[in-house]
Image (cartoon, rainbow, N blue to C red; front, side):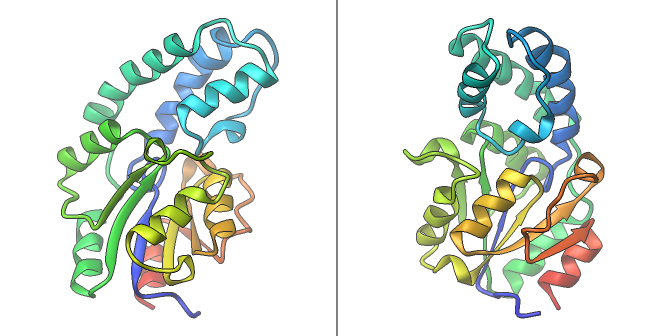
Length: 216
């Protein structure tokens, strides 16, 4: 397997931290139960998207019962305890980050989450230093599954997307990375066990297999 060795770009939610389980519960309890007018959305439809774009999608597809400002405020409020208290870091993530740095590769987080949410995770788990921390909020283009965020990330670290490894867990995230031209690793966990992630170059089951791919 010809895995690029110049940069590794990690999605945050569902990869570095197990937040998708908590976000799915929030969606079931409030977003899908009270914030839409009708219908039965699936988690797959919105997982990996920026929360502002989630509102736009739900409003167009199902109708919404709250304003966008109320929707964003509810997500922001939930994020504080979710990232600050509840989520767990991927097993071995700090050691993996150290080994990537020691190997001379650039290292970054590329996420649909806003910078302040990413900052909570970085500070709580000591993930710095990083060569790039990019949020969908930082670019004035559509987010995942569109490829722009990974095209922008590659440019920011001075590389072509083909020289970057991207680690993603959602269908939308995998699609964005593949369309950008990056070597895409789909990270399988409990929250996405049933998803079709076959668009990725390789699918790994957990941190041990991820390490094997990155250091093959």
